[in-house]
Image 1 (cartoon, rainbow, N blue to C red):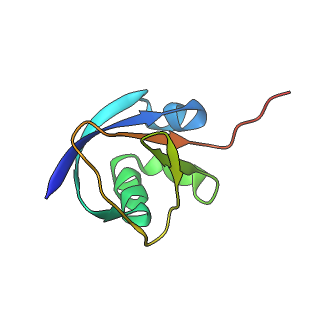
Image 2 (cartoon, rainbow, N blue to C red):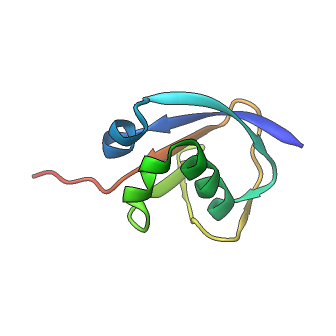
Length: 86
């Protein structure tokens, strides 16, 4: 099965991908690690965030590991790089 999801890129991930958002057809279920790997294939420049990025599905953080995620058509996946401010 697959799901059509909207990937939202924030801050540095937006700069690196050149996008604010994009629609992707993604296999489901999929692990957080496989989802991140898919995004890296789409945008190799995101590798600069490796180990420092967080993904969120339906506005909840998800681990970039082997845990399976069930995606549904219309889900939003956010790519959140480290934030700084002050």
